Image 1: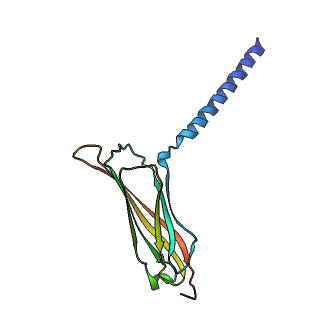
Image 2: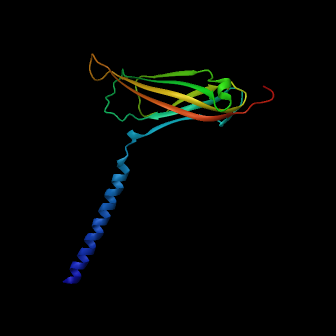
Image 3: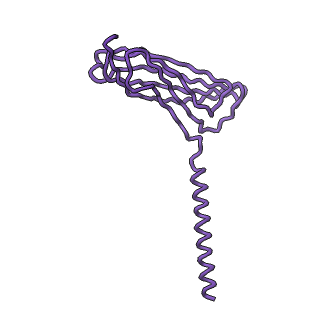
Length: 171
């Protein structure tokens, strides 16, 4: 009789362990919803820029972690202001460069796409360390809650990208 209880005990322990592993696996897969995913970056071809125009892109994704109801007349506006700023010994001499502004308008709203914002920067100082600073404002105007009311959600992000301006003798 004892071997029977011992075998039954071992089988129950095994089943209990395997069900816990299954629960843990399921919990780990579903614990972090995609709604918490945010991605923002300034991507240039190279961190060392020349003194001519340099092309880059801002990649931005923000999945709303909100209980929103989307309607066809809702709008999303993504507004970006960025500038190249000299740092180090060039900061006092050259200050902040020209601001670049971009506005993207989306209607109807799709919250699942990564937004790609092309940028072009022309360095305004001959050489040295610099930083590209961008402020991104993401605004949702939602009309689907009440005929007379509008709900507005706004998210702001600040991003920086360190760069080095390499001067050319021919410039």
